Image (cartoon, rainbow, N blue to C red; front, side, top):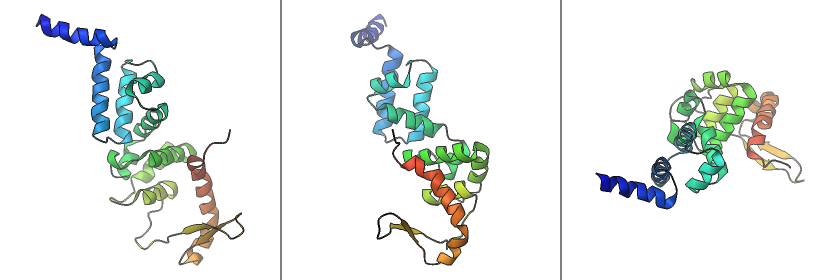
Length: 191
């Protein structure tokens, strides 16, 4: 018994890392090895910070050998309302990109509204359609209008093509608002 305790403490002493941190680092390696989604990783990172095993996201990222951005984006994903996560089909279906878009949408229109809209999302639909429903509150029928955006010949304008453009035209102001709300989450920040 004394031998095993001294063996454990000597491993922690050799590395200079407390035993709880070593256990967390091993658990993190298991999570990453299993391909855990951002929501799961973010929950794990938050738990470590809440337990004060690491003083900051930066030191946690360094010890886990991941970027600070991954830690921040994972935590952001884990903070999405459970209803929003479920609307995508659960934690395994929430990518960093969809989490970022959903977070931006929550900031723009409010957590309560996005959460209510999430409850209307049908099961097993594509993430892009989930984002559409969270953005508009409209559940589209199976034969919805698909848009194709392309750059016009002059290189300065966007062109919108749709099989039934007449259905789209009355909603151009809403389409513009949606694009303006979502673009900042996909465009690089200007400095």
